[in-house]
View 1 (cartoon, one colour):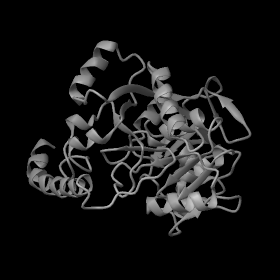
View 2 (tube, one colour):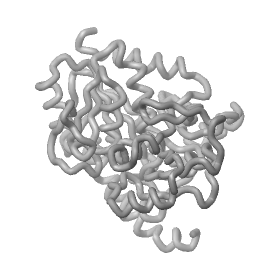
View 3 (tube, helix red, strand yellow):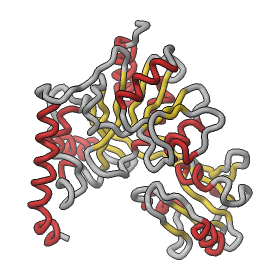
View 4 (cartoon, helix red, strand yellow):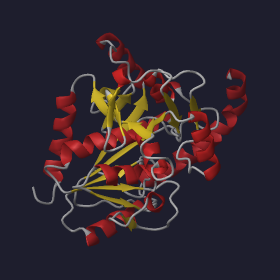
Length: 341
């Protein structure tokens, strides 16, 4: 792996250099950025996938939606539609993508929209939903055409951006200096028992600016699985009573929590669209057992697998400490920036 990285490193310099030039063009105003009067929070990362954006967006929804009219705007990765699409009761998963459809299915008092062109997306939201008070931009850290008011940058505990290289030698979409655009950095998927001493070591590694705060979170798995109507606690299950399916980036945490047997799961690519052949494979491998999947995969598998057999494991972002500080920072920004403040 080290040898391959050395071979690819010159290409990383080219890739990173192009991204750096693009960023400079935005920084100096040679490329246009559009800002808006209402508060916009961008959640993203420097690396490719798997940092926990979905549970972080959901955390922000739970924090904000009872106080402010909240809209999520996503790109709608791998959807089968184009342009702007605002989810409604007739919307299918294929229309907006799996993650936006998960948000829409889960939170009934917010709106969810998709548009690859985020500026157009916000403009259309404000026309169609003029009561909107805050917009959450999902995975838009590199989308510089829009200027958000607050940036939340995610980095995974065991794959910190400070230890990584730019594509193709590493997983970064741009040089590490891109982190300077963040208001806060959230280290995700940490061990529950991560000590303050080790947190401080990570802070030193990240080498943040004085005005940037860092927070540490973990994935909190539920104690029961569900299909929306039935709930089963883990003490009712054993390793041989279920089959696991995952089509997400880095599913190792999911399998580890379930304590899945080595021959009792199947993995698909992230955002995978399940074909009839895939469904046949899952049913054959499951052999009548309960099928446990991730929440994101559940929205893609629902209707394709028997609902009495299909379950998902709910997850939430949990702060190791300083949750009140993070919440106050977000609420303070939205409250001061709101058009109704």
